[in-house]
Length: 469
Picture (cartoon, rainbow, N blue to C red):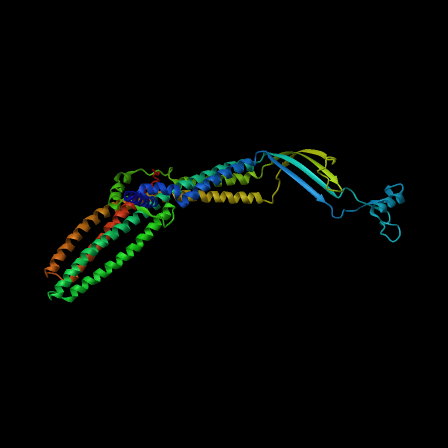
């Protein structure tokens, strides 16, 4: 029995551990990029926009395909209209009037009588139904042909927007992932500094209690420790925010637990790629340039669309229908008589004069096209400059990292020497504090320089339009 209880307890404990591990999302930086490409909010919207563009393309295509529409009309006269017929048209006027009066239930004395020379009559029945089916087909319309081309261009714009969104997502995830690692690394360094500083403070306090040093030395270390503890608390809050920002970039709930498998040191090694600095910049393949060219194409089609509105349009239709009439609702009875009809027609619409409205709209479209061409020239210059700037910043980040690493080693050596001098009574607490603050500053620069290498590489990849792996 004891063994059984132990086994159940072990299984229960293992299941808890497994469930806890399943709730945590373990990601390397590349895993995070791949995950965000599929789940990031902007990427989801971009994918939906492509689906919408495909539907819009088909919607435009169907305009030139056969259209079938059915129509059913039902009418019920609450009070039927009366028509007046000239009495002179009938040989026996009095007989007709008497017949009408009998029909309406009128009498000759004291009842309304029709105007002299006219006979009131009611035509038709109180109820009627008309059902028809119409087949229509567009034969020629210049704007339809341009619309098909525009729909294809619109789909291409949506696909390019998705590609650009993915590149932006990669850069955003790299920055968010790096910020989390920076917060963790900074917190690790601060905790280590706190341990060293607390030890120094304790030793200095003992020396002061024995009357071998001044109280100012103790107070100086207490000030430094207080600032350090404040930085630790602030870094913990920033770390939480950094994780939440990463979750947003990934496209998951901000409370979802994420564990990062990469560290800053390894990522710096992976992201130090000197060959990337010499990679050729291709303007024609850059996504921003292709988007600009596509916008130009769209405006060219807009000019063609306005011009096409001056062309004739031709369409045809054929319909078949039936109608029925009755004074009672008997349209579903077998005895009800229905009268068939059918019509074939062709419609030719020829624009002749629009008071120069079409000319004005065409002129506006041409001006918009010229503006697009100007913007395209601007984008060519900006993209080239952007690539050069990104190269320079990436190279600078690598150089700054090497410098920060050397400076950190020097700052550590100086701080250790000042500790020895301080406890030997050869330097003041102020000198030690300066050395410590210099060390803390170099530690911050070192951590930030690692992030810069990672972030600037991602920025350069975007500027060079390096495809996502």
